[in-house]
Length: 486
Image 1 (cartoon, rainbow, N blue to C red):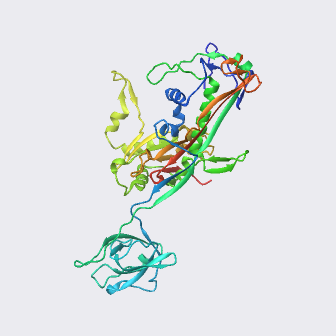
Image 2: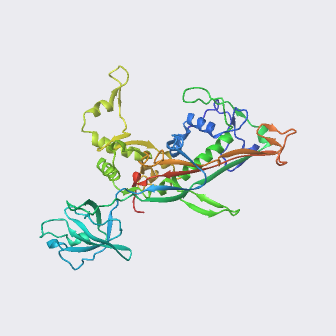
Image 3: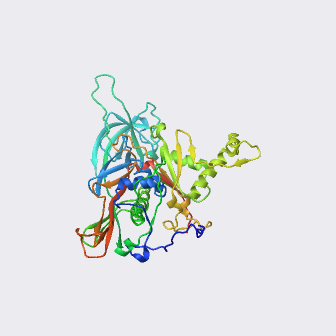
């Protein structure tokens, strides 16, 4: 950062930290009247200042309206299981049979569920071989035994023994019933629900200011404009703005890197931390690579997420990455697109009307793949931040390896759920609060005749709240992680 010339430098203060402000460490403040700050005003100011640009998770969830208010820091929700469930063979009961089912003979299988029965047909992992249930289920330990026969008129055919080994899967296919005076009927499978339990974390910040610091407080008039160019009438003192910003940044960092934990606090109450996005994504589609990322690799990775999912119109995802990941995204698409003539008109353009002045270059930030896949790229400055990402790239040693990390986020709400988005910001109802503890002075100056809490020439300012993130369906998310062996 270049130094300001003397005519522009009003006053300089060395950096400091902590929660106490006296006259030796006095921060310049914005022109303001009463310093009461409400969360909605804070959000408006920081949106106007584009300050959520360094808090992308909060920007994509909270600022986008994907906020769920809950009644307690512990919450539970149901995750709907798949409407169709595979059956798993637990034991090969025909281990000594080289040709199970040959000549229309019956044989036995042992599977993990008891909700199928005659006259249903089960398809093996090779859909050329299906078996019709004749009898069962018969409970046997942790599984159920069925008597089956091959669904085929060719008496020479039999089920390959390898398809009956433990761990192999079966799928309910259809029913086979007699065409007259039938008395057998197939059943239905209803998707299971899993109740999951999780929690959110709590956050707090404070600072104290002495009476002398309050009296000597220099004020700098700084105009803030909203997105429409209208001057905002509400201003925050610099120290208060920093306190509120620190609270929001601590939420952002916890929402990304936090891991669920519950530990006892000093007063005997529990300290809870909610899972961050990265802990959630470990249950998603995670792929680690060490070479150059190509368009084919990206396409195949995204197809693994969306393959066999319904709704090609609903396959738009957000790819969140750092600076180096953004460059890699551009380079892989530029390499793929270089054979198209349209690149000339997009990369080389005139500046103004003069043919002598040309501009070269553009950057890919959007990808439209096959089968309805669409990717929007956004930058997350935290991925480049060595404060939070201290592990460096082995060759580009001045850049954190997280700068190449690509996080795939699908914000579309899963069908059949009541959630507004697949990724939601959580806060506990009525836990956001802020205020001050007055001594002989308060935020508006000396207290003369009013109530004080303590006989100290200063006052304390504080803010606290809760925050968490909820990923409803982690199978719609994932990460492409550049990594090398240490």
